[in-house]
Length: 230
Ligand code: SAM
Figure 1 (cartoon, rainbow, N blue to C red):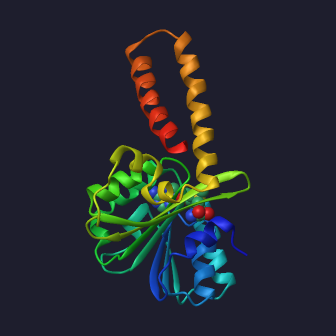
Figure 2 (figure 1 turned 180 degrees about the vertical axis):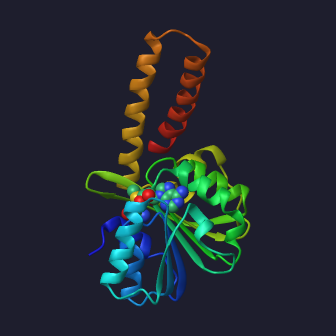
């Protein structure tokens, strides 16, 4: 059985997709969607040897070697342009996901959908999507084992509507903001509390240019988040 988080990621994979799961670790996600007949073919990418071996084992255990190809390599270097139609990258920081997409841009040819699940720093992915003409089509926020996760789903194409309130929507997510559910409220109340604690520490710290810049940035974010929590 898949975790609630990976099940949510899987739910956005279009039926019949050729999927690349990058940074797959144990390959739970591609094995699950293949066993459920949701994808046609899978590529598993792993850069670290331990997780790569564990992905190979999982695929072999399920007799899926003929339809799931486990490859060792960094980010999107394991796929060719026009090879896959959907890419999942889950369980990493937003800036790592962004750097994988940025370094592998040429490999995105033929990819129709990206499903990205950053553990932190979703804003940096939203920024990358806009800069690279990927349209955010939906988002989900969920809680599992006291951790809060965001899922961003994007398709190739210009944004249909320009962001109305760009800074806010980049930070908290346009779809998540619109839904404004209990998990969203919880996530941003937690962040707010955390930032205010840092501000308190900065108040008593020395006014170095770095501290002042950090404080200014936090105050800006606090203002944005207080606005959405009203
Ligand atoms: N995707 C799985 C999930 O969501 O449960 C596993 C997440 S695990 C925390 C992150 C995995 O990404 C690790 O196995 C790590 O080796 C892999 N990884 C990190 N950077 C990578 C990169 N540049 N290319 C491929 N895999 C990478």
